[in-house]
Amino acid sequence: MMSQNNLNTADEICGVDRDTEIFTANGWKKFDKLVDGEMVFSLDVNTRCILIHPVVKIEIPHSGTMYQIRNKQTINMCVGLNHKILIWNRYDQVEYKTVKEIIRLNSINDSALNHSHVERGGIWTGEEPTHFCVPHSDIIVLMETWVKYFGIYLAEGWARGTKGGKGYGNAVSIKQNEGERADTIRSIMNMMPFKHRINRHMEKGLIFTIANKPLHDYMFQFGDSHHKFIPPEIKALSPRLLNILLDHMLMGDGKNRHHDIRYRHKGALMREYCTVSDRLADDVCEIMLKIGGGGSVSYRIGDEYGEYYIEGRKIKYTTSLKIIHEHTANGGFLNAKYVHVDPISYSGPLYRAITPSGNFLMRRNFKTCWIGS
Image (cartoon, rainbow, N blue to C red):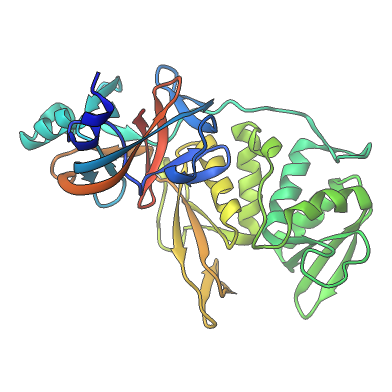
């Protein structure tokens, strides 16, 4: 085993650089913010099941060479020469290869490596409760109905007091223009175990309101648009229920990319979600991971003239807008024609994340994949 002193200067070491992020139960984190023992995502490579494990964090000072493995769209990592990369070969069998091996195979245009790929998705089982109970009450809602309502609320809703003002009363409201989506909301409201009212807002707008203290008390925690999030008990649901949740979130702050003919695998439309909440952006990445291939985030920095269009609807924003793109493929191929492996000079902390499964989900420059510990 290499000594701590040797690790400080040797190039043949394991670890990732300071710009690498790890996906935790609390969202994406740089390693300097990661706490030893924190719960992180990992993968059972035999079953492809997504797991959540406590992590052992190792930080080592390093001065020397590291290696950047990247392509244009799906792969970007900066690792030590002996770090093990988790790959799937042409027969869909799992292998761990060191960066040193990948450099050698990449340099000779090895056919086996060219047909191997990294992955960024997995299989999530999740929970399938039949009902949701509003906390501190005896109010019970069918779970399918609840995730539909909660999804639309995250996109278009607010609880009295979360948007400023004195906040008297127990109103929980959702706003939508007249049309098919408003009809969907009306149908969902009719399935909820609450009385509701519908008020007109300006020329085409409708506001759907429930006045109920237990519901208001629960929904108030999700704050305004800058602080919204998805609670752990909802993120723990099955892919079927998470799909329903996401589809109803997209009714307000998202879109299916049909207008520029961007399709996912097997012809399905690519889904994108937009939010100004950092926490909600991480939560959407998590539910996209649990649904299938995961999601990546791009940023638009707004100013007083900032604009973005969601299915023809102009959105003005003055802070950073996070756009979460559902992945169109489960990973990226290591074809030497497109993948570059370059040595770079690096001085700073080197990090490892030790998990029982021997891997973790990493992100660098908004590109994600599973990587060895």
